[in-house]
Image (cartoon, rainbow, N blue to C red; front, side, top):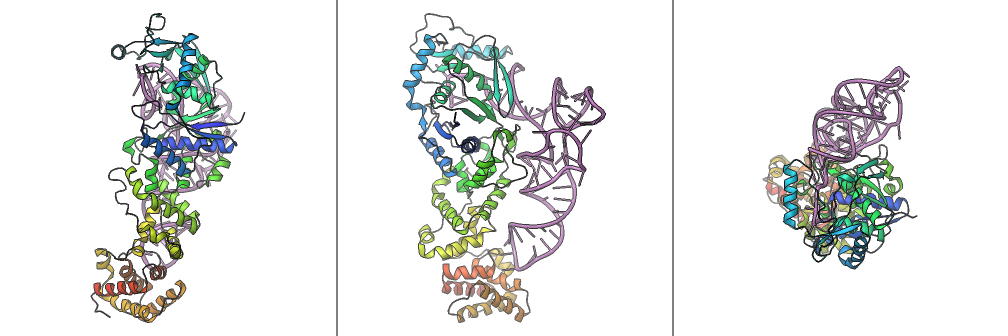
Length: 495
RNA sequence: GGCCCCAUCGUCUAGCGGUUAGGACACGGCCCUCUCAAGGCUGAAGCCCGGGUUCAAUUCCCGGUGGGGUCACCA
């Protein structure tokens, strides 16, 4: 039988990294075996499910490239299917109606907890014949003392006892299914052969196996993944920052870097750290997945993102940067308060997208490539090249635009003025080197004043590259203007 | 509390009875250098504890400790 796996998120929140990693492992497993990867939206909780979450989940998966091989299905559209199964279960006596009130259940639980016992349903309605199905829930009749054995390819053999499982609810009082029921019904219906999910769902596996039995179905295989924890070693939650995967898009992470980072949480292939997506597909196996939970480490993700930025061709990186900028404003809503507030707003996109500008835009991206860890850092490096106006960092000015810097600045300015256009980068470099030699200064004494004059900061791509790109992006006249301004800030007179 | 899972540097991990316990992130130092990076070299840092099994345990078994998950008409 061919492999069919699925990702079944519930739209009660944004797609977070835990669900994302599970989706990735399912996807890799499917691709590795030439099987199908499906997406199912588990929106049985009609109170908490939101359209917005569904959209962001599908968008997030799409961003990573983890598309469903079949159109995603929505559980909220399948109530008739579930209804038929409920009828069957009640008729065969595998399940029964229960009209115990919420209040009774609550006090029962409270008593049990107070007495130090495990809270569980007391089976009051199990053998009652006179329960009015209207407004009643349906519970599974869980057998008394049986052993449920799960053969997990990651965790090995795990045994559960049915004594530890109470008669759980399959149908809510409004007739809609609970998660426990809907998962089983749909995994069966979709022909899912292997369920790969987080091990927080391990305790519900025996319940679902029981349900398969009650329905007379062969259960699929189950594989559980170790959890991803926050830095405090607690289950990942809102307070661990970036709730939504798409926040990482806003923060300038590459989808392939996200996948690479996530695949290494719980999985390894010898000493290899950097993987392309096709390498992941080729090398990924469930057998190589570990059992211990992993702490999410943003610093390593950042490093890996830099690696992937450097792996891309300049053209691909440029496209990735522009794609990130296009989504930036709408993605801002995924950022946590405080976090990412410092992400500069997108520059004039139309200008960046104009085909005529592509050469210098690519040159700019290439200049930022080796020094950026995220696409946002590219934006930061790029700022002086994109805006007509320039803000001078007072600290940079104070430190670099000293009286000693006047001489080299004057020389560079008059050289630029005297040229019809600037030579190529090598030519600019040659000029600056010979200038510094003739002035008896180190190259730094020339480069830094020019850098601060042109960019307002002490940090930028190599000075010849900076000059060269600037000439094309803002024009030679603006370059002269900025050099003049730098000279003035250094206390020099107008030239 | 019941049930279940887990345990190698701070973090991610390799290891599948005999290794100077390897790699990566982060951290320190050095080199390169017009800034920042990147890159290169290098340093510090780890097998939770106790019993077994064995000629030999990080590795296998048991117990403890510690951590995590889960016990809803949430998923």
